Image 1 (cartoon, rainbow, N blue to C red):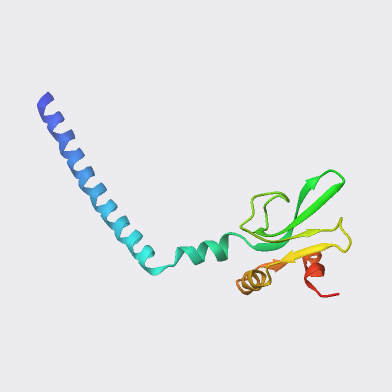
Image 2: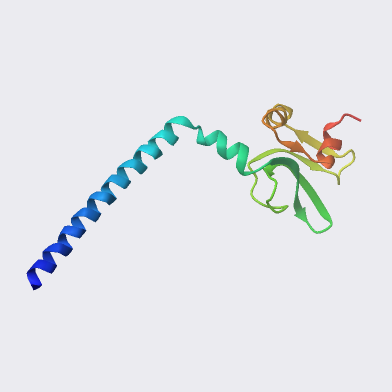
Length: 125
C-alpha cells in the first residue's frame, strides 16, 4: 500500500509541474506581446508623473540663490532634478538671470508646466 500512494503523489507532482510549465509559457507569450506592442519609455514619462519647471533654493541663510529646474511634481523643493535649466541670483543689482530657453521650450513641448514664479522670470520686463 505504501509504495502505491507514494507513486500516486509523484504522478500528481508531474501533472502539477506540467500545468505550471504551460502557465509559464502562456505568461511568457503575454509578456512578449506587451513588450513588442507598447513603448514603455513613453508610458513612464506620460503616466507616472507630471514635470514642472520651478525654482529650487541654493545658497545659505539670508543669501538665497535659485536654480531653475525641471522636476517631477511630487518631489520636495530641494529634491533631485531631472535637468537644471538655469539660475537666478536676486542679490546682485541688477538681478542675474541665466536661462536655457531652448531646453525650456523642449520641456514645455513635452507637457511640462511652468510655475508662476518662473513664468515671471521668463517674461521680458
